[in-house]
Length: 129
Image (tube, rainbow, N blue to C red; front, top):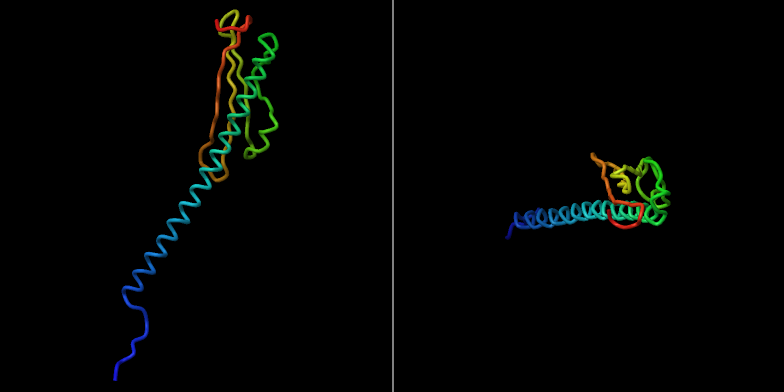
């Protein structure tokens, strides 16, 4: 009479461990990709904010340049809370000012903050110095 053996064979255990590890690796890749997508989206928004601010300042001209400080944009509300947008205007020479705009934010759960910055020169006569 054959003896009935109950339980799992070694092959079945190894195959199930392999399948579980593949599933865990796929889940980890999904989590990491969602973080990268969110970070990339926020960088794109910050770049649009900074670019819009510099284009507006260029369009208004040299005489209308504001003092350094913070600025606002409707898109800043789509970035994480406590996002700051700053503008730095410095005199390069008698007819040229350097304008730098930056947006700084921190992703939820991130240790370091992210920054997007752009600079341009604006002259009195509208061309390059």
